[in-house]
Image (cartoon, rainbow, N blue to C red; front, side, top):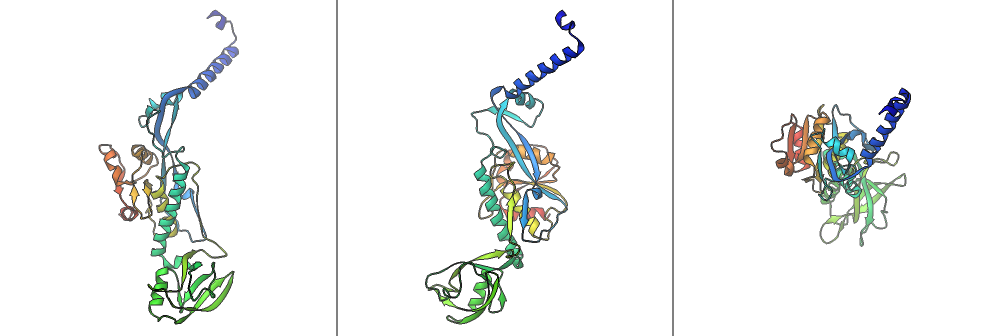
Length: 327
């Protein structure tokens, strides 16, 4: 060691620094046969969901999107796992939770699409005025109104009644006889047209003879929903994104001033499905400062025996999640 002692303090410090860098790089890049699973970062969903063309309501609390880290572990990650009791090392061949940054992008895209559709269906039922007429998607073969209406038209009213739902269209038609001609207000390429539409019997029911879709927003301010998900993957964000959209578009504050963590897949019928990595999500919810943790009811058995200060509520549907937030 005398050769080291003969070096100046500055040289010895430089050598120590270089050795630290080499050791650090080795531990960071050195591969192992293990993978690490741990609670990942969490994100306030209001910063991820951006809605345009509609009034947005404020909220005193916020929803939290939870993630799980699941990736090959270097030697450094293996060392880290000994200091974090919430993380776990598993063999690389073992299936890993797919709800973190390396999850499947297509699953997240599908989850966002379903979340938007289900949330909008709920909002349209709760707030009919949210819909600004019915857009003509296409005319049906044999329709007597095929020469009057065009694809892209917006039917704003029929027989003097403003239309906010396709059910209202049926209610108007039910009051009239087949072949009756009803006054209609139609918006076409920015111009308002006063037309006459004939009640048509297609062999099963009265109708106008067109496929309609609800119009959200206005031509001057079109409706849009954008969800930033570059940090996460997988489908487990379906429930929390749906709740966030509803919270922004309805006057009732679903959070009631609380931090609410939610996770779970969502299908077209509003049913909440199980996810992987539920234990890590629970830890993530605690770290996010959440007061209530909504999770799939099917995952509750995995949380049995775990001590937590959170109010954990298992739900099987969007309706159950909304009901839980009201209490």
